Amino acid sequence: MSLNTRAISAQIIYAVLDKQQSLGQCFEQYSHSLTPSQRGQCQDFVYGVLRHYSQYNYFINQLTHTKIKPDFNLVRYLIAVGIYQLEQERVADHAAVGETVEACKQLEMEGFSSLVNALLRSYQREQHSLQQKLAAAPAQVSSSHPDWLIRRLKAAYPKGWKKIVKQNLAKPPFWLRINQNKQSAADYKKMLSAADIAFSEDKQAETILLAQPTPVDLLPEFFEGACSVQDKAAQQAARLLGAQNGEYILDACAAPGGKTAHILEIAQTANCDALDIEETRLNRVSQAMQRLNLSCNILLGDASKQDWWSGQLYDRILLDAPCSATGVIRRHPDILYLRKDEDINALSQLQSQILKNMWSMLKPGGTLLYATCSVLPEENKQQIIQFLKSQPDAKLDPIFDSETSDDPGWQILPGNQNMDGFYYARLIKQPK
Image (cartoon, rainbow, N blue to C red; front, side, top):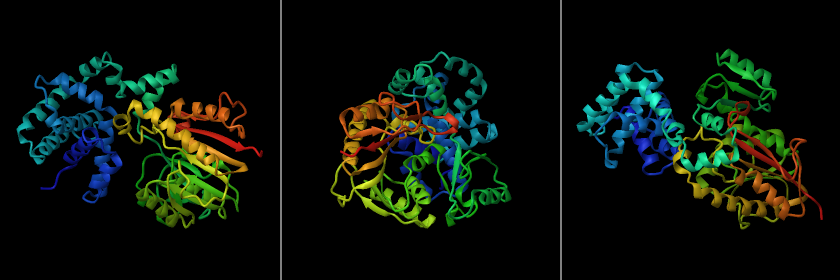
């Protein structure tokens, strides 16, 4: 029996929450058996539940006197999928309940069918009062964020942490980067209009925001390299790096290749190395290069080591450092469950190690752009402050006039100008 999208969604949520698998891994496992429309519906259910699971779990506990044992967490996650459907009101209530009960049977847990049906019916009746109770629940429940992350956000952003939490639970915007080597931005916008794809323009001509997420196979000439899907915050990397034709560039931690491609769209004759530690992710860099008709040197290696390096110094280095990804939770809600408090110190140490290693590969007079998709100061501003103090030949190259060595870099918070959370700091290696 083939499973419906509710059953598959519950299985994916189980893999994330109970088996600690990433969403990317999970969807890869199921993608071959799903049609595009089924995949879209599963993504909607899974992402929606993970963004609000603490709340839905709270509702389930309020609605039942029968404790659902951990052995049957799959049932709990299935009920959460049902609650999400009822809350969103995109599916008729009777269909949401009926299909979720049917999923219970498909998962060979027919004994729980009555419970699933009863809880979803109760939620329909008590939805308003449950929402009122939620307001008095602990912050971890009402915000769907773990305590450790709330504590760190409060410490870093005492006045703005609630806005960050709200943005983390929102659906992300859908940004495109137009490849102006293929056609002008104006011409591509005409193609979008002809295809009835609504968008809004940005001050950067090649950056546009689609009114709603759109499958790439519906984007005009996507597979011929006309555009790339890339958040506006991530699009700042290549611009800030400022690569020039003929220069020798390193994109460290390059996968999946969006920033490498953008660098080469700007400086077409630059000699660019794309380095990553994961071979499977480097395949995506290769695919991006082929689709966009670009060329780079793809290198498998650890950015904290030098065994992959030829010894030739780079003119510019983009270091998109491994990080907590706390700035892109709205795109990857599994981060709320997979990331741990102790990870932050370990990541901070790794970032420091990689930064020092990359610095040794940079030419005197060269530029290094440090980037993360984190909002935590330990990985960002504090990292750069410490580096500037410990590295005599490192000088801050301000992105904004207001920057100082005690307050370096550009911290973008989720939702700022509709962007993801990112951090950038630009450094120049002074000749000795």
